[in-house]
Image (cartoon, rainbow, N blue to C red; front, side, top):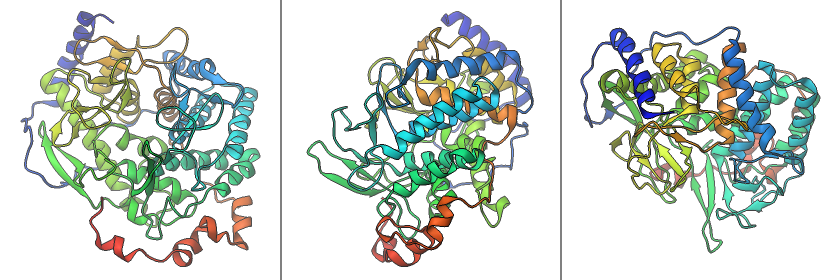
Length: 480
């Protein structure tokens, strides 16, 4: 897309939205306070109803990524075009893509079952790390564990990534009974004693170049709560991880934006405010915490977080004429991975590399972030985002990561996660919230009803009450 065309489209949409939204005052770094409540919704409905022909075509182009990058040897697609590295987050996204494409109608029943059977088989046979958990990285072509540098070896584990995997394993299990027992067997392989403590707090592990592994408490505002839902779906008590006990707020462009006020810690966890951390819970759960005793109360914080994220980005466009859809993404040039944020490390609209260094002029209007907001907010602003991104696909399959804010040029990286979330957004419009509840008991419940697997922290009800003592010292120590 040429820069002049990009600006022309942006300004036309800006005039429409400005009339609707009015003006606000900009506070670059307003006084940090506790998160002020946002209204239950921002006044725009969700998108729902049959997909238009153009939207079905969008879904077909997104699914083409998975035809283009699949490895028959493992049944796993590449994490990005040109990269064989995948994470458990990516595998969860692949399951999401399979189900979403089937619901939309761009994936037939036979291909769906073949693909689903292959990935489930791989998950049942993949090598686990020394903690009895999925490794942080795998080679999609060979299926072997790899380190951060792509060489064979272990790299620790991510509770956030495992949480997304658990969400989509449960969605598959609830909807497709023919795969339910095999899904249960996957989760029964995992050892939960290091990833989740008896207080329901999430933990991760990272490996240094010398092989030394560091265990740490993992999770920051938004993604912590999202990942915790995956563990909750399988019976673990994660109420403390679901609570938002560490947020403050800043005013940006006249809107309150919550952020995680904990230090980055060691290893560093940059508590960046990004689009996906608020929107995924909406697409997949309708902002309702599954199995919560008080559904309305439990869903309110995540709804408010998503609304705040939307309003700040909409305001940036209405006041400054800058289309904005910020999310972490892969780049087509150095540093190759960027944390594009609304707020991070004290800086509004910061773009950071994985070490927290500012990367000037690298911000991208993220395709996946735009589609997530488009599904949840039927507004002129999200229409403008999709209009700007309409040409951003590759003829060989898959949507590009987005458009660089600086000049409107294309970020030509093509990733699994981006195309999966596009499919999620379209499936949300066509069929509604992606998670559906099922109370059917299967192999998981029947096996754990009369059997204990203490070494693995199963069953969940006994593990968190009996097997592992409460971590009193951790409770009194500041959360890293």
